[in-house]
Length: 560
Ligand SMILES: CC(=O)N[C@H]1[C@@H](OP(=O)(O)O)O[C@H](CO)[C@@H](O)[C@@H]1O
Ligand SMILES: [Mg+2]
Image 1 (tube, helix red, strand yellow):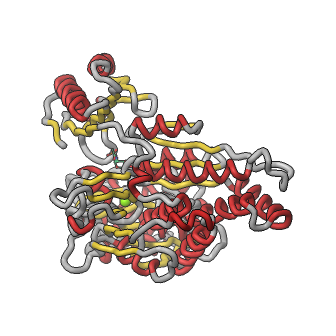
Image 2 (image 1 turned 135 degrees about the vertical axis):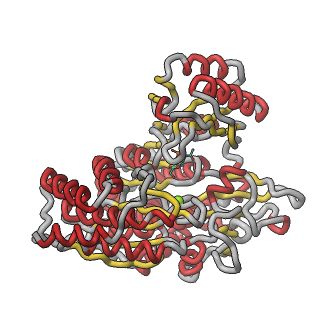
Image 3 (image 1 turned 180 degrees about the horizontal axis):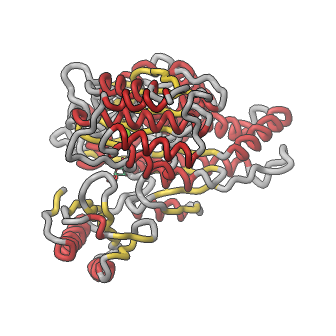
């Protein structure tokens, strides 16, 4: 059959490097860019099969996010704009590791039969391709195009250099039959931002948030995209640094991952910025953290991380819901019920969880990895999820959006311009602004800015919502990280037996102590996280658990 012959011939142009094995982890395949062309070619074949299987547009993004510039990676976006279904991950692994074209094609034919995927070109579909600014991206994109054209009936649409969330947004929009170009993306978020700014209560305008925002673009794709978006924005002054020109290297001493892990200002920020509201994007602009430089003589910062962004969004949304549901609201027959859920991982600072619970919010935990958080958040009318490292978004159920739209119409006719009507309009604007497919640093940044203006809060006021408990995160190299098995959203060690009891015994020695370990999904290490009422106690708790882990699982030196 011609389709099989095509696949065989095309895949023989991309032999797999010997001695390496690839795994579709939390963030797709990632590796040194020089060994990735077969993986990208084959991932494109998987994406093509996925689009034939679903009869919908699928996305393929070439990026290695916050990893060094010499790395690259590839991940697939499902028709709803989220990550590729976990059910297909083992197949993607087998495809990436098939030793030769014949076994690859055999694997594909068998899978296509099992999943009832038509291979002969009877059906047609499209894949949207995107890549970040990595120099290796161009050649890898060509490999992806070859992979797509090797599958009959599927066409590649090259969307150019994009942030990861832009590509996910486009896939989602395309499948909903909505406009899906980059201009549409920028227009939608710029318009909904303007709408939120126009709805800032007049009496609060006197508290106008002072000064500009300075953004660190990680020398990646996000800085340039923000420059394009900036010209469409009103009501916000932004200065963008580390846009990748002037010799800056992607993710080197810059970016959200660096700022959050090292808790220092990125390169290009210094004494002149003390006190100013600053934000940092990661290399593909799906993570966002804020910070404030504390002193002219050092690069220490007050870090405003994903937990605090989540908290800010939660406080704002809760406020709008409570306005809509005010008892004395005579203008409407009934309020607007909403199940609001907050989703965190065990890495969320305990002070954030306490604060959110004190507000009466429902907080649930999932394992690390946005695919878990996203899924959980989608079970609510409004689900807000964030990893401490700054990846997260706010999801609205279709049912809630249609009830909200109906409520807005009702209020527009009974009491247009009232606080109730404005609260409904604000929530509607948030559903348009915040990316419904994945965490998105650009749309997240605009929502943070709109909410700060709404409350009239400086970054310092925001940061003081609660005080983070001191924490310490360490890594331990062990012989086999899969020896650690966890339960309860990774907070309890089930295997090796007895290790949890040792961790508990260490933890109770410290006031407000909390500690857990888990195998990393992206590195060959065990991560140890500890929290306590003082930095010394958090450090000492983490250190002692590292020692126990090393002695139980084989030696290794703690690494920061
Ligand atoms: C502690 C930490 O930050 N872990 C990160 C990291 O996963 P690990 O499984 O911990 O290596 O990379 C993931 C993908 O980017 C991200 O989702 C996650 O939050
Ligand atoms: Mg990223």
